[in-house]
Image (tube, rainbow, N blue to C red):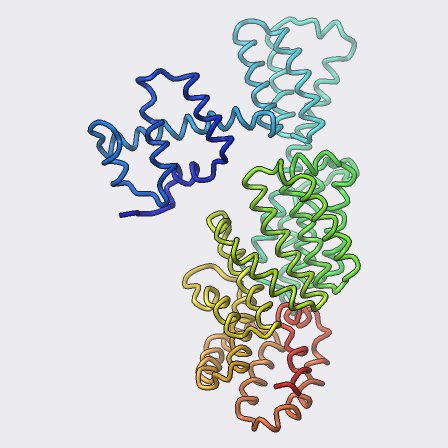
Length: 504
C-alpha cells in the first residue's frame, strides 16, 4: 500500500532529469565496486514507484533487508546522489565552483604548498568579486591572511601588498555585515506584513513606522558604495515598507530600481535567474495595481523574452519559479486588458499543468492560482467552473491564507451562486459570511458594502435589479479611488459586474 510522497530521498529521485540520472549511473559505475552497489537497486526501485511505498522496498530489495538496514541504505544513496549532483552542477553554479577551488587551496596548504595555495586564492578571489559572492570573497581573503600570518612569503616584497589585503578585508567585512543587515531588514518588514497586513489607518501607519525604525541597522554607511546584493535587499525592504502603506507609486519606484540594477549588472541576470524573475514579477504586480497597461506590456515582454532566452539552462527550481511568476503575470495582463476569454482559456491550460509544480509550491501560491482561475472563469461566464476552482480556497482547512484573499473568494462565491440562481445556498453563505468575516474587522469598506448589496439584491424583485444596482453604483464609485478599495477591485471588480446589471 503506498504511503507518503514526502520522503526526501523519494522526492529527490523524482526531481531528477534524465541527464542527471544518467550521470549518477556513470558516477556509480566508475567509483564503486560490485559489492558496494546494492544502493543502486534501491535507486531503481524508488525511480519506478509512483508513490513512496516502504513495505514494497523491503520485499523487493535483495537479501534480508530490515527497516534499520533500509534506513542506512537510503542514507548512503542520498549521499551518493548529492555528490553526483554536485559534480553535475559544478560548472553551472558559480558558488559551488568557487567552493571547490577554495577546497583545493586548503588541500594545497595542508600539503605545505602555501605559495601555490596563495596563487590559487588570488585567482578565485577575482571570480568571487566578479560574481558578487561577497561571503565567499571574505572567506578567501581571511584564508589569505591566515597563510600570510603564519608563513614568510614573497608578499612582503611587493610594495603595499599587505596594506591592500588588509584594506580589502576591512571592506569585505563591511560589505558582508551590511548585506546581512539588509537581508534582516527585508525579512523583518516582510514578516511584519504577514502578521499585521496593510497599514491603512493613521494608527496602523504610526505602528508600522515605529516598527520600521526599530528594524534599521545601528550604523550608517555610504549607500552609493553598496554592492549588488546590498542594494537588492534594500530595494526589496523599502518596496515592502511602501506597499504595506498602500503607497503603490512609492513601491513601484523601488521595484524599478531593483529591475534597473540588473541592467547595470547584466551578468547577474544569468547567475541568479530566480532573483531577476522575482524582481520583474514584483514590478509587474505594482504596474497591475497602478493600471499602467503600457508599461505592463513592456516589462511582460521583457520577462517573456528573457524566459525564452534562458529556459533550457534553468535548473528545476528556477523552472518552478518561472512557472509561477510568468503565468501569474500573463493572467494579470489579461485581467488588465479585460480580455476575459483569453484569461479563461489560458487559466485552463495553467490549471492542467499546475499538478507538476504543486509539490514545490507553498500553499499561498497554489491558492492564489486557484483564485485567478476562478476569477477568469467567472468573468467569462463559467460560473460552475468558477465554483469548482474556488473549492480549495473555501475549504482550505488550517492552511495559512491571507485574509483579503479569503474574503474575496467568499464574495466571488456569492456572485457565482447568484449568477447560477442557487439562491437558497447563497442565502446560507451570506449568513456565514456575515458571522465570520464582518466581525473580524479585516474587510474593506467596499467588501462589506458588497456583502450588504448582495444581501439586499437577494430580496429584490428581478424586474427591479437594474434600478437597484444603478442606485448602488454611485456610492461604490466614490469609494473606489481609495488605495485599499482600488486593490480590492483589482482582484474582484464588483463595479464592473454591477455595471452589467441590466443583463442580469
